[in-house]
Image (tube, rainbow, N blue to C red; front, side, top):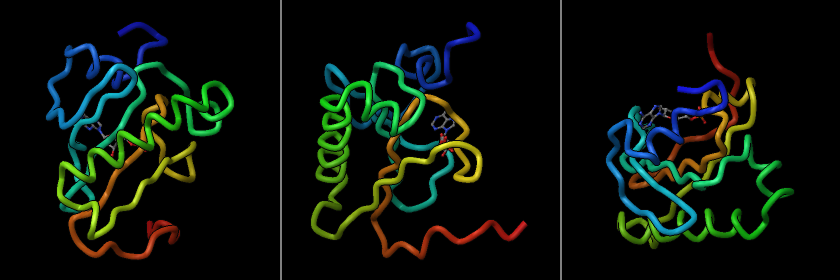
Length: 120
Ligand code: AMP
């Protein structure tokens, strides 16, 4: 992996196996390897931005593509009516570990509260 390459670029390139649930020209979606809910899918723009703010500033149309892909994933996962949560972690206090912006699409069951400090 080159210095600038992220894990998700390798997933998108097919170099790391993933359970792909949706893809189109601009986005790529696959199941999170450590699911935090019954449905937990990551939606990643093929073009890399570091986080939500950089994506919104750099390519608002691509951010809209990510939001629409999240909705398509919710539809194909059967959670469009029951509801779902979309989360973008940004930097360390939020626990961002992969610096290629991605939406977590969570649902499939009632979700707990979020935003509480880590207990550790
Ligand atoms: P974040 O902490 O917001 O940067 O989210 C990164 C997410 O990527 C975490 O929820 C990880 O469980 C997930 N993840 C890491 N490696 C993989 C992988 N190879 N396939 C699928 N999900 C992964």
